[in-house]
Image (cartoon, rainbow, N blue to C red; front, side, top):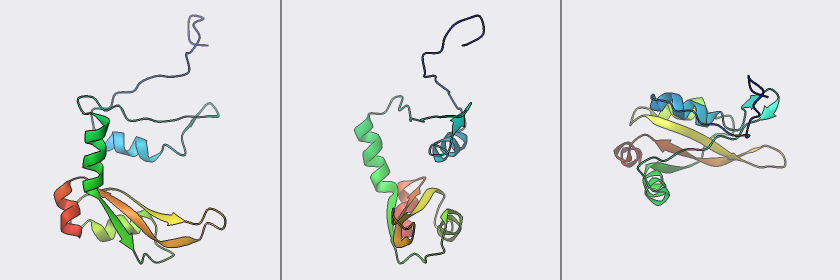
Length: 118
């Protein structure tokens, strides 16, 4: 129940002016809970079609091979930051034993940064 006796429809919107804050929120998407309920976060693409967003994302994403098993998001971002700002980095893990598979992806803020990384 919301103040005044109104009930919640189960969804809401948050507008963030700072792109970095929005990215941090998206990075929390698997961990966020409000009052014990798991919350799903979706990106609102105002002014851009989903296909345009996906095309841009694919040009900013680089494939990483040979990642050490003990590497984490922070260490990958630190290593790649010399060529440009990294929005997100992750390693692929085996679902059964959570063992690192020695590859992953990094998403750069700009296409130019991704090209420099290659």
